[in-house]
Image (cartoon, rainbow, N blue to C red; front, side, top):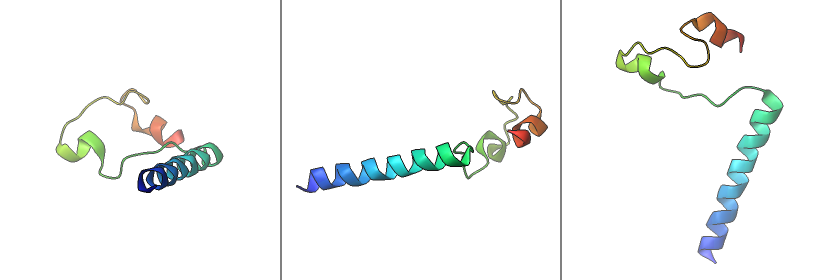
Amino acid sequence: MTLLLAFVIMLAIVGAMAVGVALGRKPISGSCGGLQALGIDAECEICGGNPDLCDKR
């Protein structure tokens, strides 16, 4: 019973996140700054190194 309840709760959380992303049109993003927080200058796959493009999306 506990395993089934845990599964249903996790399924509800994932479903709520999916609906939030679908309605808000904003992708889920990290909260810690990614590689730049570590001092690593890596090229973004989405913007190709131009941070202005990431802000537009």
